[in-house]
Image (cartoon, rainbow, N blue to C red):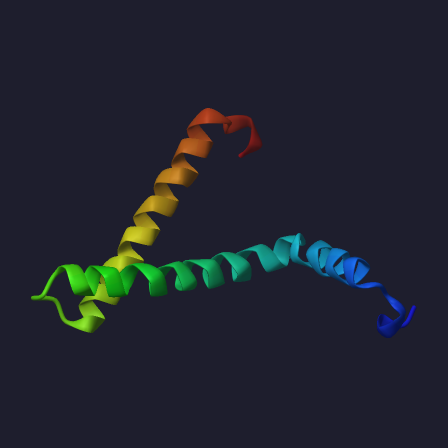
Length: 83
């Protein structure tokens, strides 16, 4: 099947199917975390005048890691049979 012959919705569907594979989940998760960090860090930098820019990005990334670990641990506690 030629990619040009696919309709736009079929192309999006095949793209989403490839994203659902296990090996892509980590990469997509890291990409989303970095994008979220780009949204959080400037707000943190603007809210506190005493932090340097690098420190604000590090604190934003640290906050994302803490929240993601909390969500993971809550999932493990609520559904231990999956793990």
